[in-house]
Image (cartoon, rainbow, N blue to C red; front, side, top):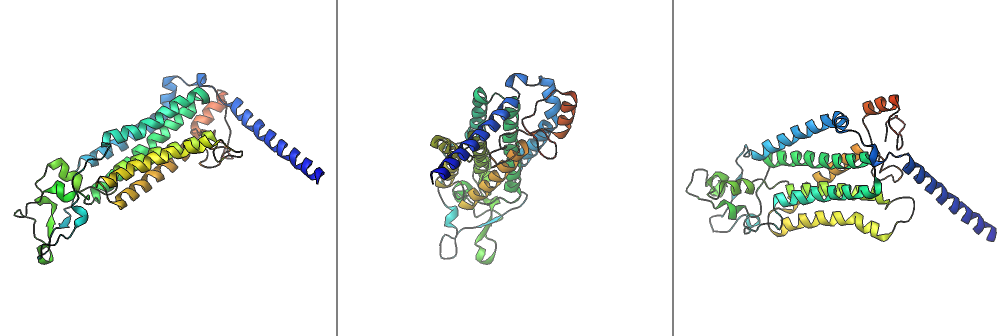
Length: 323
């Protein structure tokens, strides 16, 4: 029994020693922050991505300025005076965070953390890829959700309060018993009317989950919460903190009657999907702790760099891509 215990102890020590040696070799092979490329060299590598993001952002902005191309009908009251859509009759309450504040918080918080982490990581391409992935997730997700908002949309829970319908206008009293009405009979402010008919999906929620899920994945990768050794509890808390922020932003939208639960759910699904894919485009894995903090490069960039012997790798895949 003692012999078995001694052998097990040696095996555990050897395993830990091998893991520490592996981690140290990866760290030593990584280029320092001082080996960052000149600005024009960096721009030569990333300009196609910057151009694509500008184009996608412009498309999103264009759809955001559009009015929905259809005219949805909404119910009001029946012949007995019963309100047919109480789920659309909530009062107008502004959310705690405006769209601008929510966007700045969602995107700005991860970027600040990425930048501050360089005091410890000191790796230019790690910062570069972290920020690029975050922008991929946010710009792509925003374009995706704003197109759905414009082409599908839906009435907000506070629609009737914002609409202020005038039933003497053309477009009122349609359908059986004339209980359906076109939103063109609304007399409220034009900006508020437009906002009231594009409830689905939630843009605030999409941005929050795209950013904060991405940040949680990045924190897990760098703090090694789900790694091959036991982490400190504060690291687990740090990974879940961004998720709490995203949920609180989404919850505030429902409590202030700005979105239905299904608007929020779809916004979260879109945001999480873009966060996962965007992270994987920049780093070698999502959950695999042995490489989920290793940066990826374009294959063309790797071929040129390795041919000239100018780049030190942090690791490699079977395909030969620098990671």
